[in-house]
Figure 1 (spheres, one colour):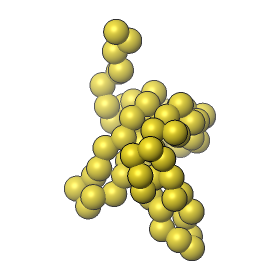
Figure 2: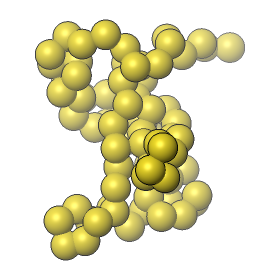
Figure 3: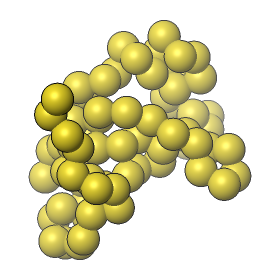
Length: 73
């Protein structure tokens, strides 16, 4: 299921993690040559991908949320 990115944080190993609108988290690493995501390296790059939909396998498996439901203030 496609879910948009609403924010980011770093995990305990200092890797970037996308926070999805569904409440799940997903790593967004830039580890060439296996994974090419140079946009994750800079704040401007990450900001430019807010709203980008990623495939959320946790939603597909109906797993509970990693994060609380985002508030719409």
